[in-house]
Image (cartoon, helix red, strand yellow):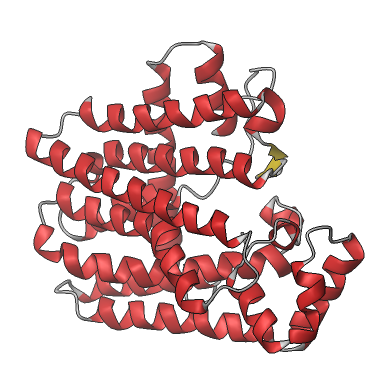
Length: 338
């Protein structure tokens, strides 16, 4: 984190605060009914009894990326808040449904929506969040063209996200998954929203001539981000990540370290692929993979993708200061712990 300047930290903190204010303002106009309050619970504003609570709300990363790109390409940062709301709601819709599909009981250190209110209502909540994402853009003061472009980008990203999730779920029933298949899945499940975030930033700043370059940067950021997420899933601190260690193994996920581990340590296949793994099995697999250098191989891959992103950032027709800010952002993402 030594490569992250005070300027970037202040920038992220400022945008996050403004984004939070925009989200709260948007929700202030919505009904105070059970469905909307469950969304407020998931977003970290209410507890399960619908009383105000200030819990961890996630990184708000996608709206931050959108606003940052808007600002450094000469746009009015206020114009990035409506698409930022849409991005955050879309991301959280995917988490609510993801928790159902993965049967996860905890998210960000709190009980998941479906584990409290049931699967049926969890589906309703996720669906409602998608409609609100569109509403955030359509109700904004942006001109018609920008609204159209933002909705088009968002819907394309949502479809790609669902394609990636479809692949991810299907991998659970397979014994072998190739790295190329994994990367294709990640480009849908994770990269789609990173790409949408940066591209939306160019739309609101009226610098769509830079969209293609930013999308390529976002793709590499997303690939590195997801592999690091996979690392944290096995070796992260649950007190920091808010999720139990080894949940990917319990759910028979085929994450990057698990795919590598199956190839590098074939003797572990029977234990890894067993659908009834014990806590002792989980501990054995994690230690075996770490001693085999799997974690380091994964970190090298993360570094490789973020290095590619830096090379692309250097080619952007922006001033030195903003190029430096984007460079620092890559180190910020590379060194995160949750």
